[in-house]
Length: 303
Image 1 (tube, rainbow, N blue to C red):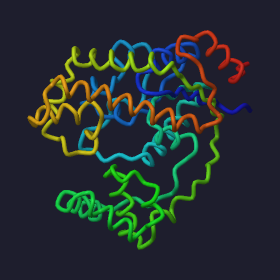
Image 2: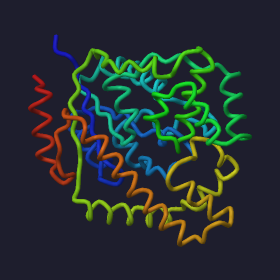
Image 3: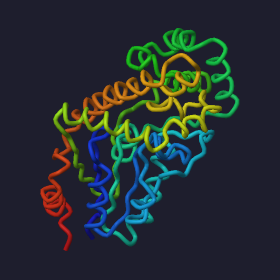
Image 4: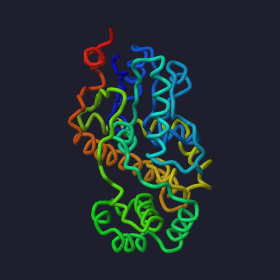
């Protein structure tokens, strides 16, 4: 019996994944799984460019708007839940589409995440309290002592990563590195990866335009609604953290908007650097819809 196929459509923020993913899903009469870690939060519709009600009506979507801002969620949870959902969807659909730009989430499903222990509530609360009272620098210094190898590779400006590594060190008495085996897990389905790319200037223009559109759609009002939760990791996100600076009185609004554009462009470069490492991706321009569908038909090879 032929294995079912997961089509993975990836690319940087603003490249045009949403529209093409809808066309691909319609072509195969199937559903879409979102691999955007911020679209999971139901209060962040505008700033995450979540699918619109009209788009959701065209094709069934999963992992969009299911979480509260206060919900803890990780790539490991995402891996478990998506695999369960795929198992269910593959009962009736030989092909499912997954799309989004969260690199860790895409890798979680395609390659698997190492079996890192779940952090208990007490350890999590202790580390969050320490982060709030002592600051990130103190935690980085401790990580350097407890797990020098991970300290050398982690993004030391990302509190979530630093805190999580320390939580594991505290809870298990072992280094976080010792749990990171990096072995690729076998999946009961085939994976076909399509990457979307544009010329840098073209992409940057689209990103700038998209930020202007988000502001017109009410991003400022959306950010005001979630402002009381601004310390949460779910809101440590481009588009919100810049507006919080404006709401705090630190920045003027036009400057905050320019910073959203700039930080989105920086994020798109990071995404492309990550994706370019993956030799399994076949690249297209988003307007090459027919070529993409022809390529997918040849790969999926449906009877």
